[in-house]
Image (cartoon, helix red, strand yellow):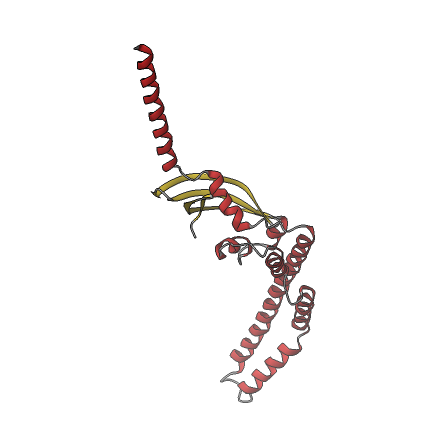
Length: 227
């Protein structure tokens, strides 16, 4: 009698365990590695980008087969030595351009002040004064001023050294050519190549943190990104 009772209890426990296991399978959530694989697939083994850290921060079940996964991760951009050298060279040239630009504006402001002084002193006071003649004289001064001329020449030299495509443009072109399977949003690229990103920062390599919610669906091959 006891043996039969123990056997029945064992069967009950086994059934409960199996039911719990099946229930757990039916409501399993995507793992951190499942979510990370989504980001890895986007980067498509592109040699310029690496995932430095990855954390699943939260998750929300939608139904038995759909799940939203909240993640936080850090991606690094590494240009490589040749591209880094080109970016650093462009950074130096751009700094030179800024100095020349400031010098040009300062010289032009000084000439404009001189012109305005002549106009104030003679307009309406000197019967021989001609606004047209003064404007023509001022244009001639600007066109022949040696300081302005040198600044313009130096800017042309810098443009010739940079060429038709900047280092940043070449880098983005290299990524497009060498990583054809890279599938990221424009916001991702703007983080690394936006107008406020310094060339020196890009040349040395940089990291950025991203947070997002990844919609995922259960498939025969496990949890995948919802398409």
